[in-house]
Amino acid sequence: MTAPGVPLGAAAIANAVMKGARGPVDAVEAAFNQADAVNAGPSGLNALLWTDEAAATQAASILEARRDEAPAPGLLGVPVVLKDNIATLELPTTCGSRILEGYVSPYEATVARRLREAGAVIIAKANMDEFAMGSSNEFSAYGPARHPLDPSRVPGGSSGGSAVAVAAGVVPIALGSETGGSVRQPAAFCGIVGVKPTYGRVSRYGLVAFASSLDQVGVFGRSVADAAAGLGAISGHDRFDSTSADVTVPDYRAAYSRSMNGVVIGVPREYFPESLDPRIRAHCDRALEALRELGATVKEVSLARTDLAIPAYYIIAPAEASSNLARFDGVRYGLRLQGDGLRGMYEATRSRGFGPEVTRRIILGTYVLSAGYYDAYYRQAQRVRALIVQDFAEVFSSGVNLLFTPTTPTPAFPIGAKTSDPYEMYLNDIFTVTANLAGIPAMSIPIGRVDGLPVGGQLMAPHFQEFEMFSAAFAVERALGEEAHR
Image (cartoon, rainbow, N blue to C red; front, side, top):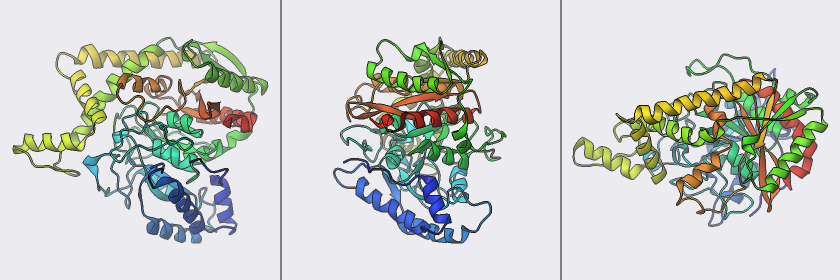
Protein backbone atom coordinates (compact mmCIF):
# COMPACT_ATOMS: atom_id res chain seq x y z
CA MET A 1 0.00 0.00 0.00
CA THR A 2 1.33 3.44 -0.87
CA ALA A 3 0.33 6.96 -0.03
CA PRO A 4 -1.59 8.87 -2.69
CA GLY A 5 -0.06 11.38 -5.05
CA VAL A 6 -0.66 15.01 -4.05
CA PRO A 7 -4.03 15.60 -2.34
CA LEU A 8 -5.22 19.14 -1.71
CA GLY A 9 -3.60 21.10 1.10
CA ALA A 10 -5.51 22.98 3.79
CA ALA A 11 -5.36 26.36 2.04
CA ALA A 12 -6.57 24.91 -1.26
CA ILE A 13 -9.52 23.20 0.44
CA ALA A 14 -10.46 26.32 2.41
CA ASN A 15 -10.18 28.56 -0.68
CA ALA A 16 -12.32 26.20 -2.75
CA VAL A 17 -14.97 26.14 -0.04
CA MET A 18 -14.92 29.93 0.36
CA LYS A 19 -15.39 30.43 -3.39
CA GLY A 20 -18.18 27.90 -3.57
CA ALA A 21 -16.19 25.62 -5.85
CA ARG A 22 -16.40 22.87 -3.28
CA GLY A 23 -18.70 22.24 -0.35
CA PRO A 24 -17.50 21.42 3.17
CA VAL A 25 -19.47 18.18 2.98
CA ASP A 26 -17.60 17.23 -0.20
CA ALA A 27 -14.26 17.73 1.56
CA VAL A 28 -15.33 15.62 4.51
CA GLU A 29 -16.70 12.86 2.29
CA ALA A 30 -13.43 12.77 0.35
CA ALA A 31 -11.55 12.38 3.63
CA PHE A 32 -13.72 9.47 4.73
CA ASN A 33 -13.40 7.81 1.33
CA GLN A 34 -9.62 7.98 1.58
CA ALA A 35 -9.75 6.74 5.18
CA ASP A 36 -11.81 3.74 4.09
CA ALA A 37 -9.29 3.03 1.35
CA VAL A 38 -6.20 3.00 3.57
CA ASN A 39 -7.30 2.35 7.16
CA ALA A 40 -9.27 -0.89 7.44
CA GLY A 41 -8.76 -4.51 6.53
CA PRO A 42 -5.91 -6.99 7.15
CA SER A 43 -3.47 -4.86 5.15
CA GLY A 44 -4.83 -1.53 6.41
CA LEU A 45 -2.78 1.15 8.13
CA ASN A 46 -4.92 1.15 11.31
CA ALA A 47 -4.38 4.89 11.67
CA LEU A 48 -7.85 5.85 12.91
CA LEU A 49 -9.54 4.43 16.00
CA TRP A 50 -12.83 6.34 16.35
CA THR A 51 -14.99 7.99 13.70
CA ASP A 52 -18.56 9.25 13.37
CA GLU A 53 -19.19 10.06 9.72
CA ALA A 54 -22.77 11.21 10.30
CA ALA A 55 -21.74 13.73 12.98
CA ALA A 56 -18.81 15.00 10.89
CA THR A 57 -21.02 15.40 7.83
CA GLN A 58 -23.59 17.32 9.86
CA ALA A 59 -20.88 19.61 11.25
CA ALA A 60 -19.63 20.19 7.71
CA SER A 61 -23.11 21.08 6.43
CA ILE A 62 -23.45 23.79 9.08
CA LEU A 63 -20.26 25.43 7.75
CA GLU A 64 -22.02 26.42 4.52
CA ALA A 65 -23.41 29.41 6.42
CA ARG A 66 -19.91 30.66 7.35
CA ARG A 67 -18.76 31.46 3.81
CA ASP A 68 -19.64 35.14 4.18
CA GLU A 69 -17.89 35.67 7.51
CA ALA A 70 -15.32 38.45 7.75
CA PRO A 71 -12.58 37.65 8.38
CA ALA A 72 -12.97 34.33 6.62
CA PRO A 73 -12.36 31.23 8.77
CA GLY A 74 -8.85 30.09 7.93
CA LEU A 75 -9.65 26.37 7.86
CA LEU A 76 -13.19 26.48 6.50
CA GLY A 77 -14.24 22.96 5.54
CA VAL A 78 -10.81 21.45 6.20
CA PRO A 79 -11.05 17.91 7.65
CA VAL A 80 -8.68 17.23 10.55
CA VAL A 81 -7.79 14.31 12.80
CA LEU A 82 -6.94 14.47 16.51
CA LYS A 83 -4.77 12.12 18.53
CA ASP A 84 -6.79 9.93 20.87
CA ASN A 85 -5.50 11.71 23.99
CA ILE A 86 -7.14 15.04 23.06
CA ALA A 87 -10.60 15.35 24.60
CA THR A 88 -13.61 15.62 22.29
CA LEU A 89 -17.31 15.69 23.05
CA GLU A 90 -18.62 13.29 20.40
CA LEU A 91 -15.81 10.79 19.90
CA PRO A 92 -14.21 8.55 22.56
CA THR A 93 -10.96 9.62 24.23
CA THR A 94 -9.21 6.38 25.20
CA CYS A 95 -5.51 7.27 24.92
CA GLY A 96 -5.05 4.00 23.05
CA SER A 97 -5.68 2.13 26.31
CA ARG A 98 -8.11 -0.52 27.54
CA ILE A 99 -8.44 1.29 30.85
CA LEU A 100 -10.37 4.09 29.10
CA GLU A 101 -12.16 1.96 26.52
CA GLY A 102 -15.43 3.63 25.53
CA TYR A 103 -14.79 6.77 27.61
CA VAL A 104 -16.30 9.97 26.16
CA SER A 105 -15.18 13.23 27.73
CA PRO A 106 -17.79 15.62 29.21
CA TYR A 107 -15.74 18.57 27.91
CA GLU A 108 -13.53 19.26 24.91
CA ALA A 109 -9.92 20.35 24.63
CA THR A 110 -9.21 23.99 23.88
CA VAL A 111 -7.36 22.98 20.69
CA ALA A 112 -10.43 21.07 19.47
CA ARG A 113 -12.64 24.10 20.10
CA ARG A 114 -10.23 26.42 18.32
CA LEU A 115 -10.09 24.16 15.28
CA ARG A 116 -13.88 24.19 15.07
CA GLU A 117 -13.92 27.98 15.45
CA ALA A 118 -11.45 28.17 12.54
CA GLY A 119 -13.91 26.20 10.41
CA ALA A 120 -12.22 22.79 10.55
CA VAL A 121 -14.17 19.53 10.85
CA ILE A 122 -12.87 16.88 13.25
CA ILE A 123 -13.48 13.57 11.49
CA ALA A 124 -11.63 11.04 13.65
CA LYS A 125 -9.43 10.21 16.61
CA ALA A 126 -6.08 8.67 15.69
CA ASN A 127 -4.24 5.61 16.92
CA MET A 128 -1.37 6.15 19.37
CA ASP A 129 0.97 4.42 21.77
CA GLU A 130 -0.93 3.89 25.01
CA PHE A 131 -0.98 7.11 27.03
CA ALA A 132 1.60 8.50 24.55
CA MET A 133 4.31 6.20 25.88
CA GLY A 134 6.23 4.84 22.92
CA SER A 135 8.23 5.65 19.81
CA SER A 136 6.64 3.26 17.32
CA ASN A 137 2.85 3.09 17.85
CA GLU A 138 3.27 -0.60 18.69
CA PHE A 139 2.07 -0.08 22.27
CA SER A 140 -1.51 0.78 21.34
CA ALA A 141 -4.13 -1.49 22.90
CA TYR A 142 -5.83 -1.48 19.49
CA GLY A 143 -2.91 -2.76 17.46
CA PRO A 144 -0.10 -0.89 15.75
CA ALA A 145 -0.56 1.77 13.13
CA ARG A 146 1.47 1.00 10.04
CA HIS A 147 3.80 3.00 7.84
CA PRO A 148 2.01 4.48 4.79
CA LEU A 149 4.80 3.49 2.38
CA ASP A 150 5.66 0.10 3.86
CA PRO A 151 3.03 -1.47 6.18
CA SER A 152 5.64 -3.86 7.57
CA ARG A 153 7.29 -0.89 9.28
CA VAL A 154 6.33 1.43 12.12
CA PRO A 155 5.13 4.98 11.45
CA GLY A 156 6.79 6.27 14.61
CA GLY A 157 5.15 7.22 17.84
CA SER A 158 3.50 8.01 19.97
CA SER A 159 1.43 10.09 17.53
CA GLY A 160 1.76 7.53 14.75
CA GLY A 161 -1.89 7.43 13.73
CA SER A 162 -2.05 11.19 13.24
CA ALA A 163 1.10 11.13 11.11
CA VAL A 164 -0.25 8.31 8.95
CA ALA A 165 -3.57 10.10 8.44
CA VAL A 166 -1.69 13.06 6.95
CA ALA A 167 0.91 11.06 4.99
CA ALA A 168 -1.75 8.74 3.52
CA GLY A 169 -3.81 11.65 2.22
CA VAL A 170 -6.78 11.39 4.58
CA VAL A 171 -6.41 14.93 5.97
CA PRO A 172 -3.94 17.79 5.35
CA ILE A 173 -3.63 18.61 9.07
CA ALA A 174 -3.68 16.48 12.23
CA LEU A 175 -2.92 17.11 15.88
CA GLY A 176 -0.61 14.98 17.97
CA SER A 177 1.10 15.46 21.30
CA GLU A 178 4.77 15.77 22.19
CA THR A 179 6.50 14.69 25.38
CA GLY A 180 9.87 13.63 23.96
CA GLY A 181 9.52 13.77 20.18
CA SER A 182 6.16 12.13 19.55
CA VAL A 183 5.25 14.52 16.72
CA ARG A 184 8.64 15.14 15.11
CA GLN A 185 9.76 11.50 15.04
CA PRO A 186 6.67 10.10 13.26
CA ALA A 187 6.70 13.14 10.95
CA ALA A 188 10.27 12.25 9.95
CA PHE A 189 9.42 8.57 9.50
CA CYS A 190 6.35 9.33 7.36
CA GLY A 191 7.85 12.12 5.25
CA ILE A 192 5.65 15.02 6.43
CA VAL A 193 6.03 18.15 8.56
CA GLY A 194 5.70 17.95 12.34
CA VAL A 195 5.85 20.89 14.77
CA LYS A 196 6.36 21.02 18.52
CA PRO A 197 5.67 24.58 19.68
CA THR A 198 7.21 26.35 22.65
CA TYR A 199 5.93 25.00 25.97
CA GLY A 200 3.02 27.29 26.79
CA ARG A 201 2.36 28.42 23.21
CA VAL A 202 -0.59 25.99 22.83
CA SER A 203 -3.09 25.17 25.56
CA ARG A 204 -2.85 21.74 27.20
CA TYR A 205 -6.41 21.97 28.54
CA GLY A 206 -8.09 18.74 27.49
CA LEU A 207 -4.85 16.94 26.68
CA VAL A 208 -4.68 13.83 28.88
CA ALA A 209 -1.53 14.28 30.93
CA PHE A 210 1.51 12.03 30.62
CA ALA A 211 4.37 14.22 31.90
CA SER A 212 2.98 17.66 32.61
CA SER A 213 6.22 19.65 32.48
CA LEU A 214 7.01 18.18 29.04
CA ASP A 215 3.66 17.59 27.29
CA GLN A 216 2.64 19.86 24.43
CA VAL A 217 0.08 19.62 21.64
CA GLY A 218 1.78 19.57 18.24
CA VAL A 219 0.76 19.76 14.58
CA PHE A 220 1.28 17.57 11.52
CA GLY A 221 0.99 19.04 8.04
CA ARG A 222 1.41 17.65 4.55
CA SER A 223 3.43 20.79 3.85
CA VAL A 224 5.03 23.59 5.86
CA ALA A 225 2.07 25.81 4.93
CA ASP A 226 -0.41 23.25 6.28
CA ALA A 227 1.52 22.97 9.55
CA ALA A 228 1.69 26.77 9.81
CA ALA A 229 -2.06 27.07 9.32
CA GLY A 230 -2.76 24.38 11.89
CA LEU A 231 -0.46 25.84 14.53
CA GLY A 232 -1.83 29.32 13.97
CA ALA A 233 -5.36 28.09 14.56
CA ILE A 234 -4.64 26.45 17.92
CA SER A 235 -2.03 28.82 19.42
CA GLY A 236 -2.70 31.50 21.99
CA HIS A 237 -3.33 32.10 25.67
CA ASP A 238 -5.98 30.03 27.45
CA ARG A 239 -7.25 30.86 30.92
CA PHE A 240 -8.05 27.19 31.50
CA ASP A 241 -4.34 26.27 31.36
CA SER A 242 -2.12 27.77 34.05
CA THR A 243 0.99 27.04 31.95
CA SER A 244 -0.39 28.88 28.90
CA ALA A 245 1.67 31.90 27.90
CA ASP A 246 0.06 35.24 27.05
CA VAL A 247 2.29 35.90 24.02
CA THR A 248 1.25 37.37 20.67
CA VAL A 249 0.69 34.77 17.96
CA PRO A 250 2.05 35.79 14.55
CA ASP A 251 0.72 34.55 11.21
CA TYR A 252 3.16 31.72 10.65
CA ARG A 253 2.16 31.47 6.99
CA ALA A 254 3.70 34.92 6.43
CA ALA A 255 7.12 33.41 7.21
CA TYR A 256 7.07 32.08 3.63
CA SER A 257 8.51 35.36 2.31
CA ARG A 258 11.10 35.87 5.05
CA SER A 259 14.66 36.13 3.72
CA MET A 260 17.46 33.91 5.00
CA ASN A 261 20.01 36.71 4.63
CA GLY A 262 21.83 37.20 7.92
CA VAL A 263 20.25 34.18 9.61
CA VAL A 264 22.79 32.12 11.57
CA ILE A 265 22.16 28.37 11.60
CA GLY A 266 23.98 26.40 14.30
CA VAL A 267 24.89 22.76 13.68
CA PRO A 268 25.50 21.03 17.05
CA ARG A 269 28.31 18.51 16.67
CA GLU A 270 26.73 16.21 19.29
CA TYR A 271 23.84 15.51 16.87
CA PHE A 272 26.18 14.27 14.15
CA PRO A 273 28.09 11.40 15.80
CA GLU A 274 30.35 9.12 13.78
CA SER A 275 27.70 6.40 14.14
CA LEU A 276 25.13 8.47 12.21
CA ASP A 277 24.15 6.86 8.90
CA PRO A 278 26.24 8.70 6.28
CA ARG A 279 23.22 8.88 3.97
CA ILE A 280 21.25 10.79 6.62
CA ARG A 281 24.25 13.05 7.13
CA ALA A 282 24.39 13.69 3.38
CA HIS A 283 20.72 14.72 3.29
CA CYS A 284 21.33 17.09 6.21
CA ASP A 285 24.36 18.56 4.43
CA ARG A 286 22.26 19.14 1.33
CA ALA A 287 19.60 21.01 3.34
CA LEU A 288 22.24 23.12 5.06
CA GLU A 289 23.87 23.95 1.74
CA ALA A 290 20.48 25.10 0.45
CA LEU A 291 20.14 27.45 3.43
CA ARG A 292 23.67 28.72 2.87
CA GLU A 293 22.94 29.45 -0.79
CA LEU A 294 19.87 31.44 0.30
CA GLY A 295 22.03 33.73 2.43
CA ALA A 296 22.21 32.00 5.82
CA THR A 297 25.43 31.49 7.72
CA VAL A 298 26.04 27.94 8.90
CA LYS A 299 28.43 27.25 11.75
CA GLU A 300 29.24 24.40 14.10
CA VAL A 301 28.20 24.76 17.74
CA SER A 302 28.18 22.55 20.82
CA LEU A 303 25.40 21.42 23.15
CA ALA A 304 27.70 19.64 25.56
CA ARG A 305 25.12 17.91 27.79
CA THR A 306 23.21 16.27 24.92
CA ASP A 307 24.38 12.79 25.92
CA LEU A 308 22.65 13.24 29.30
CA ALA A 309 19.25 14.00 27.79
CA ILE A 310 17.95 10.45 27.37
CA PRO A 311 18.75 9.31 30.94
CA ALA A 312 17.35 12.54 32.40
CA TYR A 313 14.20 12.33 30.29
CA TYR A 314 13.53 8.71 31.18
CA ILE A 315 13.62 9.60 34.87
CA ILE A 316 11.56 12.82 34.73
CA ALA A 317 8.88 11.60 32.32
CA PRO A 318 8.09 8.30 34.12
CA ALA A 319 8.09 10.10 37.47
CA GLU A 320 5.46 12.54 36.27
CA ALA A 321 3.55 9.71 34.57
CA SER A 322 3.45 7.77 37.82
CA SER A 323 1.74 10.74 39.46
CA ASN A 324 -0.59 11.61 36.58
CA LEU A 325 -1.78 8.07 35.91
CA ALA A 326 -2.64 7.41 39.57
CA ARG A 327 -6.11 8.80 38.78
CA PHE A 328 -6.91 5.76 36.61
CA ASP A 329 -7.84 3.47 39.47
CA GLY A 330 -11.26 2.05 38.56
CA VAL A 331 -13.13 4.39 40.91
CA ARG A 332 -14.19 7.45 38.92
CA TYR A 333 -14.19 6.52 35.24
CA GLY A 334 -12.97 3.95 32.77
CA LEU A 335 -12.43 0.25 33.39
CA ARG A 336 -13.36 -1.21 36.79
CA LEU A 337 -12.70 -4.82 37.77
CA GLN A 338 -13.66 -6.42 41.06
CA GLY A 339 -11.01 -7.69 43.45
CA ASP A 340 -10.50 -8.60 47.08
CA GLY A 341 -11.35 -5.27 48.72
CA LEU A 342 -10.33 -1.82 47.59
CA ARG A 343 -6.67 -2.73 47.06
CA GLY A 344 -7.70 -5.79 45.10
CA MET A 345 -9.91 -3.65 42.86
CA TYR A 346 -7.02 -1.26 42.22
CA GLU A 347 -4.67 -4.11 41.36
CA ALA A 348 -7.13 -5.92 39.11
CA THR A 349 -8.17 -2.78 37.24
CA ARG A 350 -4.70 -1.37 36.68
CA SER A 351 -3.10 -4.74 35.88
CA ARG A 352 -5.69 -5.48 33.21
CA GLY A 353 -6.17 -1.91 31.99
CA PHE A 354 -2.56 -0.83 31.46
CA GLY A 355 -0.29 -2.37 28.84
CA PRO A 356 3.34 -3.43 29.41
CA GLU A 357 5.06 -0.16 28.44
CA VAL A 358 2.77 1.99 30.60
CA THR A 359 3.22 -0.45 33.49
CA ARG A 360 7.00 -0.31 33.07
CA ARG A 361 7.07 3.48 33.20
CA ILE A 362 4.69 3.73 36.17
CA ILE A 363 6.88 1.32 38.14
CA LEU A 364 10.06 3.15 37.14
CA GLY A 365 8.52 6.53 37.98
CA THR A 366 7.25 5.36 41.35
CA TYR A 367 10.69 3.97 42.15
CA VAL A 368 12.62 7.19 41.39
CA LEU A 369 10.16 9.20 43.49
CA SER A 370 10.30 6.85 46.48
CA ALA A 371 11.99 7.59 49.79
CA GLY A 372 15.72 7.11 49.58
CA TYR A 373 15.86 7.41 45.79
CA TYR A 374 14.28 10.80 45.10
CA ASP A 375 17.51 12.74 45.59
CA ALA A 376 19.67 10.19 43.81
CA TYR A 377 17.51 10.04 40.69
CA TYR A 378 14.69 12.55 40.25
CA ARG A 379 16.40 15.58 41.81
CA GLN A 380 19.60 14.79 39.94
CA ALA A 381 17.70 14.49 36.64
CA GLN A 382 16.15 17.90 37.22
CA ARG A 383 19.62 19.36 37.75
CA VAL A 384 20.73 17.84 34.45
CA ARG A 385 17.65 19.31 32.81
CA ALA A 386 18.66 22.76 34.02
CA LEU A 387 22.10 22.27 32.45
CA ILE A 388 20.51 21.29 29.12
CA VAL A 389 18.37 24.44 29.26
CA GLN A 390 21.56 26.40 29.93
CA ASP A 391 23.28 24.83 26.90
CA PHE A 392 20.53 26.05 24.57
CA ALA A 393 20.43 29.48 26.19
CA GLU A 394 24.19 29.94 25.72
CA VAL A 395 24.12 28.90 22.07
CA PHE A 396 21.17 31.14 21.20
CA SER A 397 22.66 34.09 23.08
CA SER A 398 25.88 33.74 21.05
CA GLY A 399 24.18 35.00 17.89
CA VAL A 400 22.76 31.72 16.62
CA ASN A 401 19.18 32.12 15.40
CA LEU A 402 18.28 28.49 14.69
CA LEU A 403 19.70 25.01 15.06
CA PHE A 404 19.61 22.25 12.44
CA THR A 405 20.01 18.53 13.16
CA PRO A 406 18.73 15.15 11.97
CA THR A 407 15.33 14.36 13.45
CA THR A 408 16.00 10.65 13.95
CA PRO A 409 19.12 8.47 13.79
CA THR A 410 17.45 6.01 11.35
CA PRO A 411 14.48 5.76 9.01
CA ALA A 412 11.40 3.79 10.05
CA PHE A 413 12.25 0.33 11.38
CA PRO A 414 10.31 -2.94 11.00
CA ILE A 415 7.39 -3.67 13.30
CA GLY A 416 8.65 -5.84 16.17
CA ALA A 417 12.31 -4.96 15.68
CA LYS A 418 12.74 -3.09 18.98
CA THR A 419 9.84 -4.02 21.25
CA SER A 420 11.93 -6.53 23.20
CA ASP A 421 14.63 -3.97 24.04
CA PRO A 422 13.25 -0.84 25.72
CA TYR A 423 16.64 0.90 25.68
CA GLU A 424 16.96 0.54 21.90
CA MET A 425 13.43 1.89 21.53
CA TYR A 426 14.17 4.85 23.80
CA LEU A 427 17.25 5.78 21.74
CA ASN A 428 14.95 6.72 18.85
CA ASP A 429 14.28 9.91 20.82
CA ILE A 430 17.95 10.84 21.12
CA PHE A 431 17.72 13.92 18.86
CA THR A 432 14.27 15.09 19.97
CA VAL A 433 14.02 14.91 23.78
CA THR A 434 16.30 17.91 24.33
CA ALA A 435 13.75 20.34 22.89
CA ASN A 436 11.10 19.02 25.28
CA LEU A 437 13.42 19.24 28.27
CA ALA A 438 14.31 22.84 27.33
CA GLY A 439 10.74 23.82 26.34
CA ILE A 440 11.86 25.32 23.02
CA PRO A 441 10.04 25.00 19.67
CA ALA A 442 11.24 22.41 17.16
CA MET A 443 10.01 20.91 13.92
CA SER A 444 10.81 18.16 11.46
CA ILE A 445 10.68 18.64 7.68
CA PRO A 446 11.29 16.10 4.90
CA ILE A 447 14.82 16.28 3.45
CA GLY A 448 15.19 13.04 1.50
CA ARG A 449 14.94 9.26 1.59
CA VAL A 450 17.14 6.35 2.54
CA ASP A 451 16.29 2.99 0.96
CA GLY A 452 12.99 4.51 -0.16
CA LEU A 453 12.03 5.61 3.36
CA PRO A 454 11.68 9.27 4.40
CA VAL A 455 14.30 11.13 6.43
CA GLY A 456 13.61 14.30 8.40
CA GLY A 457 15.71 17.32 9.25
CA GLN A 458 15.06 19.14 12.52
CA LEU A 459 14.95 22.88 13.14
CA MET A 460 15.05 24.28 16.69
CA ALA A 461 14.59 27.88 17.79
CA PRO A 462 14.62 30.00 20.96
CA HIS A 463 11.45 30.22 23.02
CA PHE A 464 8.46 31.65 21.10
CA GLN A 465 10.49 32.08 17.91
CA GLU A 466 8.33 29.74 15.83
CA PHE A 467 8.05 32.38 13.08
CA GLU A 468 11.81 32.29 12.45
CA MET A 469 11.73 28.48 12.52
CA PHE A 470 8.95 28.43 9.92
CA SER A 471 10.85 30.85 7.70
CA ALA A 472 13.76 28.40 7.48
CA ALA A 473 11.39 25.47 6.98
CA PHE A 474 9.69 27.24 4.06
CA ALA A 475 13.11 28.02 2.58
CA VAL A 476 14.30 24.41 2.78
CA GLU A 477 11.01 23.12 1.37
CA ARG A 478 11.24 25.49 -1.62
CA ALA A 479 14.91 24.80 -2.24
CA LEU A 480 14.72 21.00 -2.09
CA GLY A 481 11.39 20.65 -3.88
CA GLU A 482 10.78 17.06 -4.96
CA GLU A 483 14.34 16.18 -3.89
CA ALA A 484 13.03 16.17 -0.31
CA HIS A 485 10.91 13.14 -1.19
CA ARG A 486 13.53 11.00 -2.93
